[in-house]
Length: 279
Image (cartoon, rainbow, N blue to C red; front, side, top):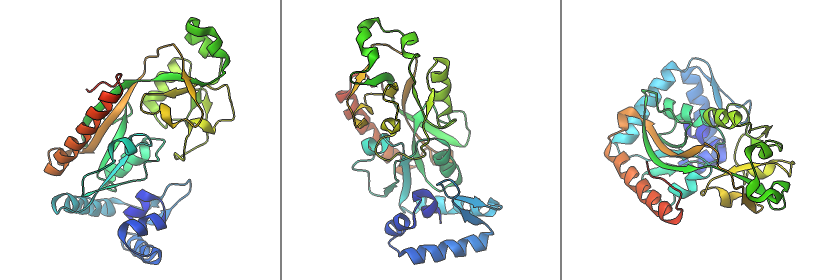
């Protein structure tokens, strides 16, 4: 059931588990009945109706068993960080879909033991939560970008933030990344919300507004389908990547091995992109 909730489709869960979809469905139904919960999918994400207290206790046992019996562990990441950091992942780690465009679902999965590790997006990380341990990987600046031929480009180096604010700026659904949203809204940005829940190719190109201002970093600029130009203006938004696990596994040897792998990836990226800062 947790694999279905995590990967979001019966076909993906069946493939990952080496089972048939009918077998997955039967097992999910049996577990739901045993724990007295109902599995629903109202808005594209699986959720449970009912008292999950006993189920979450069982998940804690299962998670501990995975960590200490060398069973496959589950790691998730954001749409851009997963391919960068989880390429050539150590054996014993199973990657997710890398398609989240919000922080609440993966954080809930991590809290409940559905997944075992998450590469989250700074500053929207639980750095003040006693349940989690955070291992910071990267920090880098955020740029404002526009499509080639955008009227703002005619201003050259004379462009100001007030000029930018005259145009719509991309935004994800409210509270998807609350800390980033707050910073950008205080700058007068984040004004054109997109109705999109999961990453599917490129969320920045989903808007019909061709004059919209977007956001990018050195690690995400290549994901735009159409060429983008960096505006010659700085904004006070530093982002980055942070590995997050439940605190009881913060010093586990398997986590230390994963961290070494990720640090090697970070070093490679920092040699390729000069603006990456290693915390």
